[in-house]
Amino acid sequence: MNYAVIFAGGAGKRMNTKTRPKQFLTLHGKEIIIYTLEHFEKHPEIDGISVVCIEEWIDYLKELLEKYRIHKVKWISPGGSTGQESIFNGLDAMRGAIDGDSIVLIHDGVRPLIDEELISSNIRTAKEKGCAVTVVPATETVMLVDDNEEIVRSVDRNKCRVVRAPQSFQYQELLKAHDEAKNKGINDIIDSATMMSEAGYTLYPVLGKPDNIKITTPSDFYTFRAIMEVEENSQILGY
Image (cartoon, rainbow, N blue to C red; front, side, top):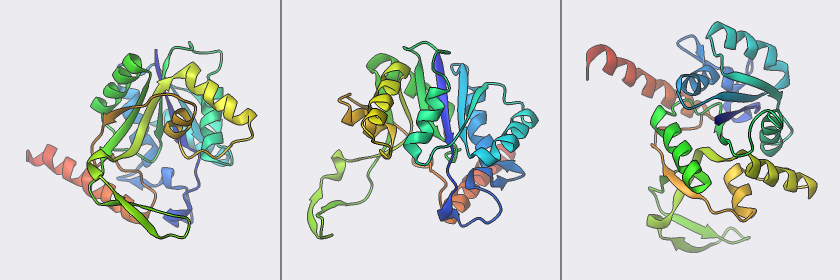
């Protein structure tokens, strides 16, 4: 069985929106979080979805799920004070309800340009190897700096990958890593890939597409809008 944990618990301060969090911004009348959820709803290999949402927006999310007929969402949890805590809440909501060897895909609610192929590749790699992490090649020079913000050396970008989402693991292994981190008082690890790497697991890359962006700033939103308009034009005009 395969499940998705969709993280939509952030307030989106970098977006500078005064009326609503970034995941509830709309394009053509539809919220970003719905664009994201629809990919998992329609995917034949996804059996259920756990959504982590800002507590004050849970009722509105439920209205959207009904409006757009998103039926695979089985759990909705409030966000925590950090991304790590929010993802834990989404995983913990499923505790006892799914098998330990199920695959869980951790994905950002504000990463709506994911596609069916990437979801399938994550599931396949996670089943075969245990840990699948979406990456894209680094396309510019990467350099390391020290504590004084002085450049130490450049890194061969041919060996560098930028980590994105989804990030996919066996449920019992990811939950165990979260439980252990929580017991140690660690609550702000940047993402699941970092947590699993630090816990000693080997990660395997799944090549994603550059346009699978995370919408965190106004310019990201405009990029999302432009990409969607290109896709719509290609469907209508056939180019």
